[in-house]
Length: 82
Image (cartoon, rainbow, N blue to C red; front, side, top):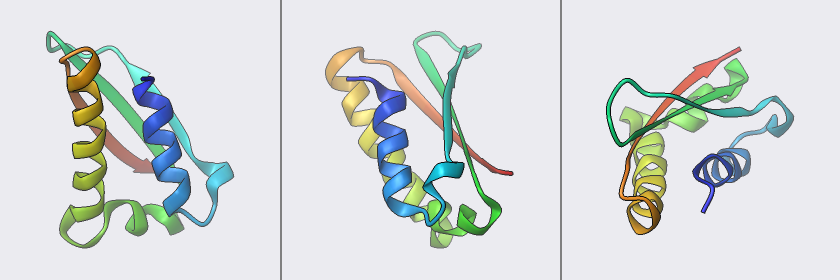
């Protein structure tokens, strides 16, 4: 499964401004690691991160589980705002 597409689909279901969501994969310096960068509007940042980071940690868990099934790679997800 495409981990970027999975991440983008989940994020777009959470935010109010789904057209402002940008999800891209970048090379990581760590071996067997996928770096995913998520950019959302500033007003949606709190929704994506959640209280004490619970929402983004849940998203990381889902994406990491998917990665484990296919590639057995570690996933890092960073969230930023416009």
